[in-house]
Each structure stands twice: as structure tokens, then as C-alpha cells.
Length: 223
Length: 262
Length: 75
Image 1 (cartoon, chains in turn brown, yellow, cyan):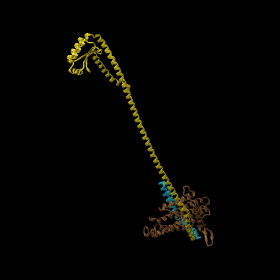
Image 2 (spheres, one colour):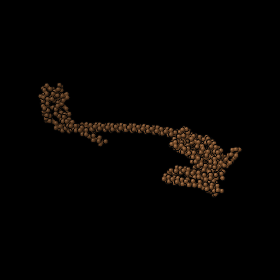
Image 3 (cartoon, rainbow over the protein chains, first blue to last red):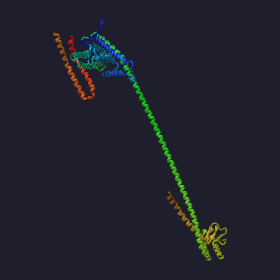
Image 4 (cartoon, rainbow over the protein chains, first blue to last red):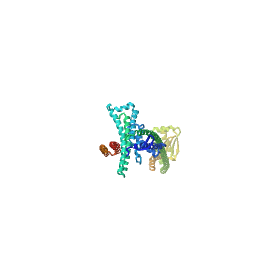
């Protein structure tokens, strides 16, 4: 039993090995990008809108409201990054109901990559909002003695972010696998449903924590 | 459980590509569409607001016009009422005038009637009294009465005061006429002449005439004055008293009649 | 053979770390239910925050599970 979809090889092209993580990531990306392209191809600005457009608008509006509620700032700058994080993780977890699908978020490589993006995005947004020194001042607040603690917390929270998402999804996968080998009837289905809920919650938590980290890097009063 | 570093890098690239794709295909168009719709709705709301304001203004305008019309109507009605009142007043005045005219006409008619009646009564009474007196006196009148009349006349003349005498004499440039009901005898004539001359002077010329209107008695007549004693004078006095009494009655009578007519 | 036994023992011991999150989740739900009982109108927001808190607490249990699995399958 493979713990990670990284170890499942789909195609081998010479020296490059395309594992299941990459393939399913592309699938999720394709669905997201293609779906939004199809829907936004002909948007109406009147009062009559298609239900797909309505769905997308609801999603985007909700994400914007959430970002605004957490950061207290204009969500326009953060929307593409945070929104994409949430949509990608959410859809990747959601598709696990499809047989044969391995969620890419169950791979530590994927979650590490996402958290690395967050880890880089926090100082980028902070510098863009407050200037280089304004952002660096974050690390010596409230006192310069806090600098090592701030640095450790910065790294540990990133690692924790990656492990949390990976562990939840992976444990869910393994739990369902173990249950399938013990009680093959009904119970795995219930667990699958539970894992779907957990996957959505984790997507929400991941996006929310990323927003909180970015907000703490951009706002003056953040600790 | 290790991280596959190739996959790690590929996932970072994948994620960045996805961010770019979704930014291009999802967030921008959706946000733009929403903003556009919001603007449209805002403009539509503004439109509605403006239209409502216009409608309100029109309603206000209409109301003021209606108020104006009401006011005009009220004014017209008041004017008409005033006019009607005036007309009625005029009519009443006219009617009162008519009534007053009629009353005065009636009063005049009554007056006229009364006067006619009185005149007739007077004439009748006078004539009756005359007739009665005349008959009585005719029956009584004889020379002895004539004698007494002359005596009486003499007494009258003698008791004339000076004022009457001078008034008599002022007109006495012509002859003084002595009227009598019967022809006087010569002795009587002389006596009368004597009395008159004694009173007015010896040069006075006397003309004697018979006037049966006097019924009995004598009268001295100059141009305008008449002095003497005769039944006619008495009757004349009676006549005047009677007329005065009747006139007094007639004055109080019409009021009563008119009061009853109203 | 001894190595496998040691792995099993280690994995089992690693799962002791689940005790803490279990207690934590219990306390969390208790607090949330108390809050809902006092102010039922805010139940929606309280539930959302409760699930978030549970997810955070559960993450610790997941760490223990991950460690346990790593001991069992990777080492």
C-alpha cells in the first residue's frame, strides 16, 4: 500500500517520470481552468444570468467576503492567491469520490509546494504593502528579543500547515483502505463521506490560515 | 514519506500556472461582471429615484393646480352667492317699494274716496242743514224776525272793534253793500243806514241787495270783508267744525287699515 | 523480527499523543454547546468556529498518526 501518490507511476517519458500526483494535479487544474473558461466565455452583465455564472459569482463573492472579514483590507490583491489555494485544495479533495482517483493533496510534495508558496507570498505581500523595512519590523516586535521566536514560529507554522493538510488527507485515505480490508460493507462509505467533509474543512482552514499569515505580515498592528 | 523534490518543484510551477489561469479566466471576468452589474443596478436605481422625484414633483404640481382650481371655484361660488344676495335684496327692496307704492296708492285712493265722501257728506249735510234751517227760518221769517235781525245787526256793528272797522274802511272806497235775505222795508233801511253811518262815518254810501243765500240776517260786504250776522255764517261755522272733525277721524283711520292689510 | 516488534510498539506509543487532542475536542465542543445554549441566535457562527477549532485540535492527533504511520511503513 502506497502512502503517497508520488509513488504511483503513470507514464515514464525517458528520464522524466510522471507520477499520479502530477497527473491528477493537471486534471484538477484542467477542470478548474477549463470550467471557468467555459463559463466566463460569455458572461452577462444584466439581471439575467446563467446558473453556472451564478455559482461562480457566489463562490468568488464568498471568498472575497471571507478575505475582507479576516484581513480587514480590500480583497482584490489577495483574491487570486487565496482563492486559487482554496479552489485547488477543495476540488482536489472533492474528486476523491471518483474511483481510481488519488488526491494530490495526499502527497507531502504537493502540500509542501503549496505551503512554500504561502511562505514566499507572506513576505512578498508584506513588502508590497508596508515596504521592505516596514515588513522586517514585524520580526522584532514587540521586542528584538522575540526575533528567534518569530523566525521559528514562521517556519514551524508553515511546516504545520503542510503536515496538517497532508496528514488529514493521507490518514483519511489510509483509514478508508484499512476499513475496506476489515469491514468492506457500508462503513467505508460513511468514512468516505466523513473524509469529504474533512477535506472541505481542511481546504477552508488552509486558505484561512494562509490569509491570516498574510494579514499578519501586511497589517501594522499584527503580532 | 520523503518529499519528491521533482514533484515538489513541478507542483509549485503547477500552482503558479493555476493562479495565472484562474486569474485570467475566473476572477477578473467575474469581478468585472459583478462590478458592471452593480454599476448598472446603481444607475437603474438612480434612474428610478429620479423618476420618482419627477413623479413627486408632478404630483405636487397637479395638487397645487387642483388647489388653485378649488380656490377659483370657491371664489366664483362666493361671487355668485353675493350677486344672488344682492339681487334678492334688490328684489326685496323693489317689492317693498311696490308694496309701499301700492299702500300709498291705496291710501291716496282711500283719501280720495274719503274726501269725495266727505265732500259729498259736507255738501249733503250742509244742504240738509241749510234746507232744514232754511225751511225752519223760512217758516219763522217774517217782518218781526226782520226787525229782530236788524236789531241784532245793529248790535253787531256797534260792538265791532277798531281793527275790524279800519279793515272795513280800507276797502270802503266804493260803496258798502248791505246784503239781506229779504227785502228790507224803508224804515228798516233807514235804521241800518243810520247805524252804519254812525259807525263808519256819514259819507258812507250804502247799496242794498237781496241775497237769499243768507237765509236770514244781514251782512256788510266791502271788497273783501264781510261783517254781519246771518244764519249762513253759523251754518258755515258748523260746516267747518264738522269738516275738522271728519278730517281728524280720517287721519287715524288709514294706519289701522294698512296694518290689517299687511 | 525484533525490529518489526519495536516498530509496532513505537507506533502504538506514538498514538498516545491522540489523548490530548481528544480531551481538547471534548472541551471545545462543550464550550460551543454552552455558548449555543446561552445564545441560540449565534449558533451558526459558533458552529463554524467550533469546527475550525476541532480541525486545529485534530491536526495534533493527525501529527501523531503521521508519526505512527511513518514508524510503521517508512522506517
